Each structure stands twice: as C-alpha cells, then as structure tokens.
Image 1 (cartoon, rainbow, N blue to C red):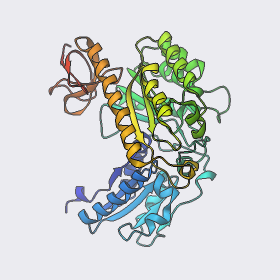
Image 2 (cartoon, rainbow, N blue to C red):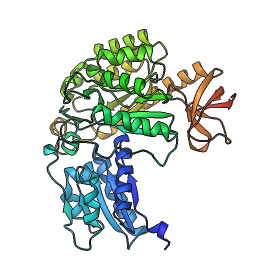
Image 3 (tube, helix red, strand yellow):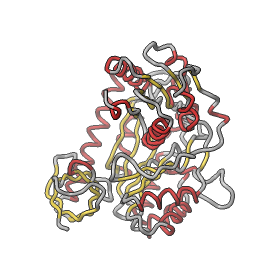
Image 4 (cartoon, rainbow, N blue to C red):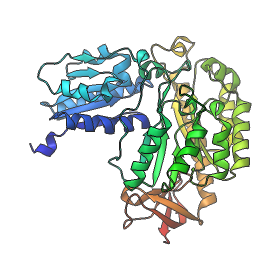
Length: 422
C-alpha cells in the first residue's frame, strides 16, 4: 500500500460543524504521524444517525481490516460505551478530545487507553483549531460558536456539544482573512446555535455585530453566508446588516421545527407560529429578495392531523423555499422519547407530504428565476450556487471557487441550468 493510501482518512457524518472539525482532525492526525487509520466523526441527532454510525464502522472494518478505526463526534461523546463495545472500533474519543493535537500524538503510541471521553459540560474553550483551507475550493466554513444552553425536548445535541461558548471575534476575522487570501469567495458562519453568539464574551457582541465586523475588516471577501439560525435570538444588528450589506447573502435557514403552537410548546421552542410569520415578513421588508429555508419535523409526539396541517400551512405563510424535513425519531435520553408517540406509518406519510409541498415551493421559486442573470459561485463538477443558494449547472470549463455571471435557462425542479456570460 502506498504512503498516500496510508494517510489518515476522515469520514464525516452529520452537520456542517462536523465538516469544519473534520478538517482539523485530518490535520492533527497527519501531523501526529498516524498511518493506516480511519476516523469516523459521528452524528447523534437521531436514532437513524446512530445506526448509520455503526453501519459505517462495520463497513470500514470490512474494507480496511488492518486499519486503526477511531470513533469520535457527538454519538461517541454521548454514548461512548456503545461504540467501545463494538469489536470493529479500536478507539473512542470525545468531542473535546478530537480537536486537541495531543490526542493524536497519544493515539500514535502503541499503548493507549481505548476510551478517551471526558465531561463535555465542563468545557469552556472552543475553536482553537481555526483552519485556512478545505478540500473543497468553493466555500469555507468558519466555526464561530459551539454548544447550546437550550433544552428542546427532542434534541440530544447539548449533551454531545456542551454549553454555549463563542470564539473571540478577532480570531474569527483573522481566520476569514486567511481564507479569503487563500482564494475562497464565500465564508459560511457555522456552529450549534450561532444566534447565541457573543453572550459569553466581554463587551457588546452579537451575531449581527460579528457580521458587521467581518465585512468591514475583510473587504476582499465577496460573500458571507449564515448557517441555521434561531429567529427569536436574531439581533437588530443582524437585521440591519441584511438590509444594507449586499455581501451578506439573502438566504436564511430557520430552525422552525413546527408550525403549530402547541407542538412548539411541547418541543420547548421559544417561538410561536406568529413569530415565524412576522420574522419572515420583516426580513422581506428589509431585504425583499431574501429566500428562506427551514427545518421541519413531522410526527412529533401528540401531533394531530390539525396540528400537522398548521405545519404544512407555515410553508406558505412564511414563503419557505428550501426544506429539511425530518420524520420524528425518538432519541433515547430526551423528554420527547417519553411522550405519547405517533405511529411510524403516519410519521412517514406526513414527512412525505411535507417534502412534496417543499418540492412544489422550490419548483415555483426556480420558475421565478429561470431566464434571469445571476452570480454563480462555481463548485466542483460545473455546479454552482447563486446568492440565494439555488443550484445552477453551467457545465465544465469554469474553475471551482470563482464567481461567474450566468444566464439561467431552465430547471428540472431541483436545479437550474445556465450558461456563463462573463
């Protein structure tokens, strides 16, 4: 086997934050001299995510029988013994440990404890692993925050990520400046709960303040984008930035989860249906071309057909375009898992109806922009993204990471096709 084949392989499951952290993991493992190892960075958001993690571990063992398999991420943090009991897994390390260079130096030794998972709730620092490049040359993800202080009844993630903690603004600006200098045209601010950013930092700091600071201090960055936000935490400075900062992309992904007030209360969300509608209306008043995405859960415990209909209606009421739909999956260790459950066939049917309505909404949006000229950030394989996050296929011949002006021609219900103008 070649030396290149022996280099550490990192498999990323789950969220954008894991994508960021996997880059740091790969660099730490390489620097430590780890060879012939596979590091699986797991997700724990649903029972299905746990199943996929275990499935990945078994598959890798079949494919790489001699490799050292290291399991980390949220699933490993929350339930380390589950993975330590798997004969296919060699080591299990926690979410804090996975980002420390010394962890991989220890793993490079011939003798090492099999499980290295400490109390995540005691962690106070975050993102000492700012990086200056990704395997993709199109967009870069910047971790600005980690952890969450909220306790939504369906969510296990706070127990995998620990308390909310923010990266100092100066460190973030420096990281964005390096990435822009390395040719990245778009930076995406990511974390577990990014709208909580700054509450634990000295002075007056918020997500809106941070956005303003980045755009002022890094004028060479063409595009700044936000990952998922919580509308009730959104500060006035962020709304003002949306109104008058053209480099802040007009695309917001909202953590809505439901459109029914009773279900939202049982989820322990901090907004109601009217708040969602009012927020989208206000953002569109400030930035009329804003496009919204949202996370929605179908079949949450106790959800009636009438309650589900309210969630269907919120797609139109908020004017949502991009949906991430989840059929409810009871996650052991959460309050929602102890509530009266909906039958699985009902959950599946409702999730399907949500997805169908979401597909119709996306189809209408693509109809509205077909035939227009757009700025496209080129990704791999001749595919790019508009400022509004619509996919555009423009064929080969354009270098990834560049922004090109294109004319859209048609769409297939999922993606626009177009041709480059300049």
